[in-house]
Structures are given as C-alpha cells and as structure tokens.
Amino acid sequence: MVKKAVLIGINYTGTEGELRGCVNDVKRMHKCLIERFGFSEENITQLIDTDKSKTQPTGKNIRQALSELVGSANSGDVLFVHYSGHGVRLPPETDEDDNTGFDECIVPCDMNNITDDEIREIVDKVPKDCSMTIVSDSCHSGGLIDAVKEQIGDSTKKLEKGEESKEIEQEYWRDNNVHVVNRSLPLHSMINMLKQETGKDDIEVGNIRTTLFDAFGEDASPKLLNVQETEGQGEILGDIVTEKPKDNGILLSGCQTDQTSGDVRTKGQAYGAFSDAIQTILAERQGKITNRELVLGVREFLEYECYPQKPGLYCSDSNVDAPFIC
Image (tube, rainbow, N blue to C red; front, side, top):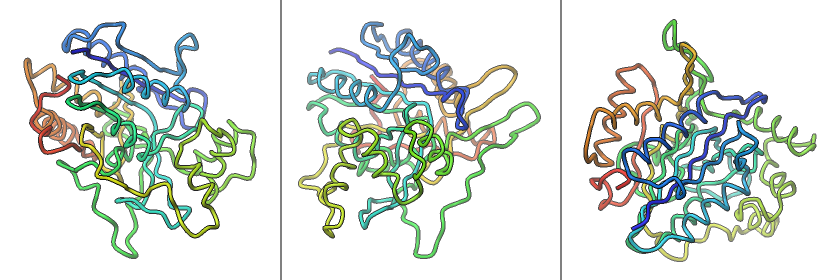
C-alpha cells in the first residue's frame, strides 16, 4: 500500500479575489499527513501560487497532478486531495443540467475552471479497492464530485420553480477580532479576473464556457469541448451517462452547494474555517476517526464558533464509517 496526496492552495494574490488562508491550509495539511497519517514527503505533490519556485496551480497543472495521482495508483493504495481556494457556480448556458442545476467548479489561479463532472471522471478512474478522499475548503463545494451519494448535507435538494438561492454575504465580522471573507468568487469578479487573464473584453454571463474553451483549448474542461461541438445542434452529448459511476470517491465539503466557506483573518493569522476545524478535531481525537465522526465533529465545532457554513459528506454507504484517509 502506498499513500499519495495532492495539495492545492490558491491565494490569488494581487487580484480582486485575493484570499489569505489557502496556502496556510495546505501547509498544515502537509504536516498532518506526514506526522499523523504516515505519508512520505516524496509522495505529496503541492501546488501553491505564493511561491513561484513551486508548481503553480493552473488548470492544466491541477488536471495533470490529479491525473498522475490516479494513473499511478494500484489496488489498495490511499489517495488524498486537499483543495483550498475559490469555488464558483456556473449557471446553465445550455439546456444541460445536473442534480443541482449548476456546474460547481474549483477555480485555478489562471481561471481555467475544473468542473464537478471532471472530478467525477477522475474519481471513476481510481483502481478497484482504492479510495480517493477529497477535502474541499471552498464555496459551493457540496456538489464537487458529480453524482456521488450525499450522506450528510442537503446540497442535492433542487430549488423549486421560482425559488432563488440565498444571497451570499461576501465578507463579515464574526466578532471584533475575526474577519471572514468568503471563498466564493462572484461571477462579476470571475469575469473581471478572466478578462485580465485572457485579454478578452467581451466576456459576460452567457459566454463564460465558450470563452474558457477559446482561451485554453485542449487544456480546458473536456465538457467545454463537448458543449462547443454540439452548440446549435439541439443536443448535448457530453453528459450522457452510459453506466453507473463507481463509488471510490469520498468528499468532505466545507459547505453546501449554495453556501460559502470562510477565509478567516484574525490576530495576524489566516486560515480556512473548515480546514482549521478539521485540524482541531483531529488534534482532539487521537487514533482512528471515521469520515462520519469527523464531519459531524467539524459541523458542531463550526456551529459553536458561529460560522454559518455546514460541511457535508459524500460517499458510498460503505465509506461513511471508514477511517478518515487511512
């Protein structure tokens, strides 16, 4: 058995979507994997954007790292992914749909978004008797593995006709000493950052996907290629499900699909509320802790600390009470 991990932290320094705690989250998780879970340094890949000597967390590099993680795995291996950064919900631009009505995405430093469908495809390639645990400390992270069973949470509840999702409060003071900026990238901010990245000035809601395809080509989401090729034909081929997805993926999400995850700034420190809660619960519970126990413990901790986000657990029934990571 080999334990392998990919850790992704993106602070978006110098942009209007700048965060502070994402790279710190990755550093803490890196230490935890080695000291608590027995990972070897050479089997941990880090992608961060605050050190140019490190591999940058672009869409292409993240896809490659995840592909190599799964492609090098054998039956019985332990695979782990931690993502701290922005999340975004892309509204439908065609008549396609999924179980939430949106594409939940993580946002690489170059805006080359990675969709929930892509994460699903990556998880489906995990070898038999090998699980892949994903911790996503980002907004809208509840739907990040498309079509996985929801065990704790209510992200798969569809909005009723005429019902609107909740207004997202981008930042707030939890108390006098704790300032919280949400890890949700509003569409107008994403469009501005995408304009800056691509040099295109005609981007608007309704052509985001085609812009991403035009800008990144074969390095963009395969789903964008399918949408592009079938545009105007009255049929979307990219999301046809030919067989039931495998259940090798385990997702611990920082919040529900319509919620935000907090990027906390206090007394010179910065971290993700969800990531910090995980480390707190792990420190309190020596020895084995199951996925269910961890998520419920984190939920209780965040509620006690007055954070509005509600973490979720998404996995097969057999993995609910499996030990976290290994």
